[in-house]
Length: 384
Image (cartoon, rainbow, N blue to C red; front, side, top):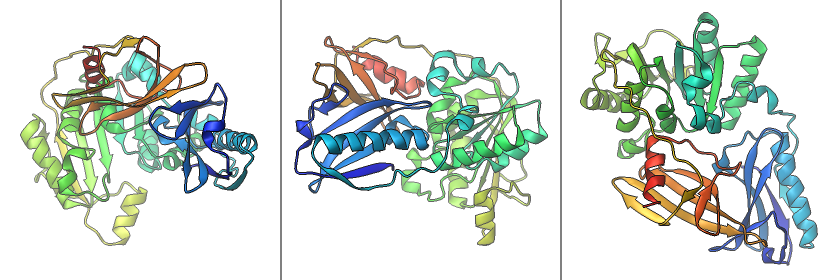
């Protein structure tokens, strides 16, 4: 994670700056930052006599030179203000620019407002969950120029590599969503996706953590809703236990039907991705699961919540949903930012909001989250 370490004998509470928001609970503060392509949060705290200036990954920025430069610039300012010096950092230039990646990005804030289908304006959509470096999506999109492809990926480095590949090939029928895939399916219309590809997810899968995995029961039911009649979910994995857990969930909790001779079959083809090459080199067996949708889902819309939102409870745990204000940050002008966890209690989201003096949550540029059904319900619970 991008960071800088400052050595100083002056405590951070000595800093007086309106852009700095001090925690009510801990000896730390946050700084909202906006650069050319990104809006993010810097978190600053003391650790073993030193001050750490660190990117808060909650806001999901592309880690490019603009982001690193902003963090380093603030660290230099802080070191000067506190009569200290930067003793280490990992913020050297990498000559990575955000613009070419942003050309392919569907921003989650726009998705929350309009929905994926309205942004794409296409009636032929296919989705790869865990796009990685984009090898599979690149070749599939090239072979199907009439189809709009979406790659969902949370990791920074693979997305940048994928975007570079797409740019080099001049692809115009690919988009990227940079977020946790478990939350994004509610933002698609029902019966609107031709296929959901999942290639080699969860390389360290454990049965005891199955409810937290990507293809858990909740996610598979959401995938069922967005698939068109005749549409498929296709899974490739080297982990037989994972394939078993997915088939069990599909058979028990969805109406999707197996399309192969066996529910879990051995894959003889190739998708030429990083993990496929890795597992084949280690001579692992690759398993394939393909299930088809035969019944149309009811088209039920998701209600939207209008901000500002009057919060009456700072902690709610009800019907498997959670809303909790983790911390309140205040600047020298008595303005406040809050750090909140919310959504399904087993897989909650995490974001920052502004907070008025009358306890109303409002959106700031750094409010990066997906307004899925669980998130909206938990936010609504906090207003009751």
